[in-house]
Figure 1 (spheres, helix red, strand yellow):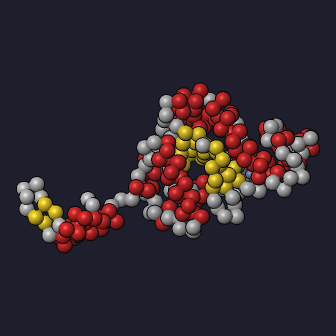
Figure 2 (cartoon, protein in one colour):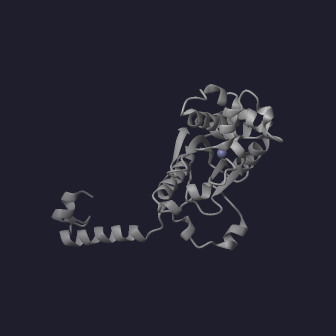
Figure 3 (cartoon, rainbow, N blue to C red):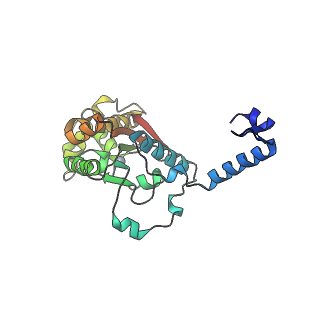
Length: 241
Ligand SMILES: [Zn+2]
């Protein structure tokens, strides 16, 4: 409906003229009903693109300190009955990184795998395959973060990870090559660059190692993206879409 019609009144199919003030009233009522209608935000995404948009708008709320997922009353019966997470996340084990909070999503909406350095291990890949093939997850996010200790260790010990304790060398080696080796350790941006590299590499690994994920992407049922959360601002920035 154009502004002109609102301002000058309108005509019904039977030819009856409707005064402009009545049309304005109808218009106002329609706007009011939209305000009380369930927000699109509360709907489950139907496509991978919608899933990504939902995550990014949730992150925007988190950045602006306007998160609302925590305000929602938890329906324990609904949670216990089953899950249909619209997105999956591989996150670092870092205690400051929490996808449900960073993307402002309630319990039951994100399928999360955690490992230091957000590396897609074979177990992590199998977990994500469950999310995609069984739960119908539409999006996988490889989530790096600023100040990542695993990436930092890979840069510092890139010439010899054997000095690291326990099983850490095997894990950190996966970040050393190619990401820690691709940066100049003296570069102030080395950690940020290697962190982006490592997140993006996670997408490559998932597509390479998992026929289930690859096929879902080819069929348009799934998107696999990477990004980095800046802990100081809370902002999650996509680095590979
Ligand atoms: Zn980390």
